[in-house]
Image 1 (cartoon, rainbow, N blue to C red):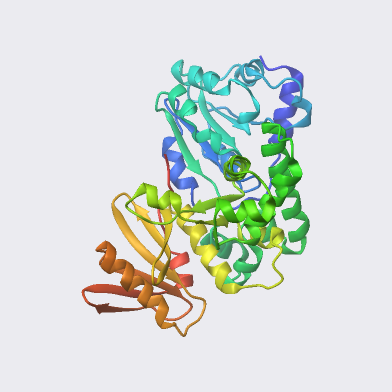
Image 2 (cartoon, rainbow, N blue to C red):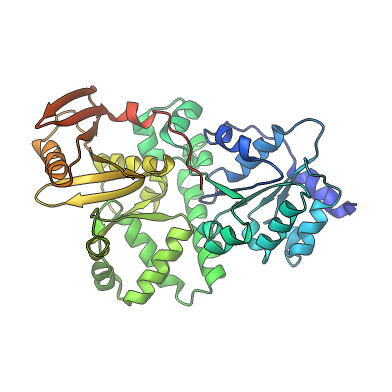
Length: 401
């Protein structure tokens, strides 16, 4: 039986609060079962805990559900697999248990695998580290782990919850609490940034030069959407190539930034070219940026990069005589995309897409902009001028792994 102390913690964590449905919930629900482990991963404060709790509310009434917050200060010093056993005590195959921020417990993968193998209970885990997608995790679960990415609000979610438009989204970003309380934006984003740096990187990886890590994070967020290279970062920050690679990996794993590489059918060429780096959230990009101007065009491009992440596309950029902001890839299909935050489209937007399509035998391309949607065909290549806000609100299935 659960001890009195653990029972009291479960009651505290079960406090009801007003929440909002996330698009990913309906995609997750069919996979919650005793033969699978659902894991939710993404940035801190992006809504993973809320999604997990809402899933518990959708479980059958005659089953037990438990939500465990492994970051609770009262659990410090006891974060081990024995604690996981204690919280699972008394549960049956159709009961459901959530472990929030499960990566804090060493050996949690083996515990979860055992719970699945013995059909002890249904398990949902969440984590703020991309390590949840590690090969070790996949191997230890024997293919039974099914992961879903929970990012800050997409624009369609932001619009549904706040009733505000695209300009507000570009300015505020998608972290749920920030979207609901924009007057607290600076303080909230500062706390999220520091938590990701300190808890997810500096403490976890025993970083010996936290100032250098912080400087790299600010550099990348200030240059969000621009082409950056290891050489540029080394000159700007005075760090070795190995340190930059290591720190960049940490920043990606903690969901502060993600990379958009150069598109090429040659892996060698792709790796040798500069990359674009984007923030996972528009608000975070502006909080940490040292830029003194608000460039709506860059923010619109970043919004598209984030939306491609939501929709599970691999994103690349391309540049030759002309430029393509994104080459969206899913399986073997390619869609070149340019983003322009003006209704008067410069010729270069179309010219860059045409050049890419001719060189790579693509038959369709898209320009996202604030104007009306229209299509034209030139040299057997279809160019769609798509309204940016319409595109951002299109429904796409959640990505799962």
